Length: 145
Image (cartoon, rainbow, N blue to C red; front, side, top):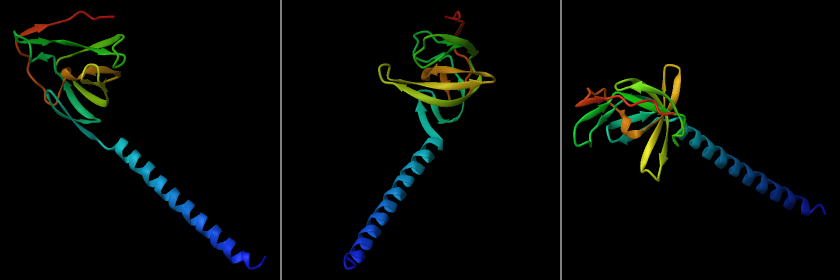
């Protein structure tokens, strides 16, 4: 029985060592995931490259319209699913971009923004890296609820 004791100690040492290696690897994975979440990400949009989290401007210019037009009031939604308009902000307003959500069915990003005490979602075409002057006619939509 005493001859098995060194073998049992070696076996115990091996499993403790193996367990420590697994713990170190898991801690490294968790640390990398946390760092990725906290690191700013660059996102290239149709109207420039922005950093998230970061700051950007609301941009109501419709660059694809046959006749140039700028939407003067941009609806801000309760979620990227756009079930309810919470409030409107003006073309050119400076906002903090908090996060993004890609909606594959639409092929575009929605960005969670904050302006003063208001927070909500806006679709990617309404965000610009730079403050841009309005083009063409100004269009003021009515607030949808």
